[in-house]
Structure formats: structure tokens, C-alpha cells
Length: 167
Image (cartoon, rainbow, N blue to C red):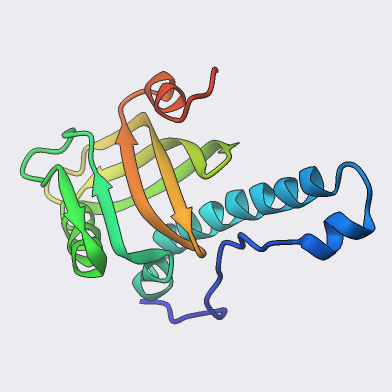
């Protein structure tokens, strides 16, 4: 398992009063845009840690009150995992039946406090050797650089609707 390659990252919800005072008009929008871009980048990093098999780094993106709500796609999986211990259990449970797999990011959309990840799962079964690929989506809600809620969806349109976005 790969070790940590960089220090912890945090979503920034900084109050930028100085910027607002010094830059008339647009400063609040600029700050919000910068935070949105950072949220998208942090989401991408969490997926990269997952694909690299780096549990320690991935857990840095998991808040103490983290909750994952799954799609129910995989038999034998819980539909809800909670906290860092639940995140580690989810990690092991999802990885166990696959000889190899990776998550491809098709697109990531900012939705304010949330990020919508449009994803493609690629995997080969450990026992069967059967390869599979399917689309799915996630909506990640984060605070302080960590996900507090990660929800899985079977379709991109469901994820957009959950985040209040249109395709």
C-alpha cells in the first residue's frame, strides 16, 4: 500500500473580508469560485488516492461524522457506512471481490457545498475473471477538506437532481 505523498488537504471556507473590502464588485464571486475549484480538485485527489490503493490518504478526506449511502448495486454490501471505521470497512468490502478495478472520472461538477462526480467503474472479478464496466455517480458534501456525506447514484441524472443541478 502506498504511503502518504502529501500532507492533509482541507476544503477552505475562509471568510475573505479583506478581499471584499479591497476589491469592489466580484470579490465574493472570485472567492466562491476559487473555493469551488478547490473542492473539485480535492474530490479528484480523493478518487486518485482510491485508485492508487492508498487508504491512509483517502481517509484524510473522511470527516469523523462521515456517512456513505450506497446504491445497493453490490449484493452483501451495507447501504450505509459511518465514520472513519465505516469508511475503512467500505474500502475493504468494495475491494475484496475485485482482482483489479479503477474509477474513471468522466466529469466533476461543482454544486456549491457539494461536488457531483460522474464516474465509470472498471473491474475484473477476483474469482470469475469477468470484466465489467458501468456508469454511476456520487454527490460529495464536504466541510473543512473532508467529506461528511458521500452518496452513490446509479445514474448521472439522479445525482444532478439530488444536487439541484440540471444536466
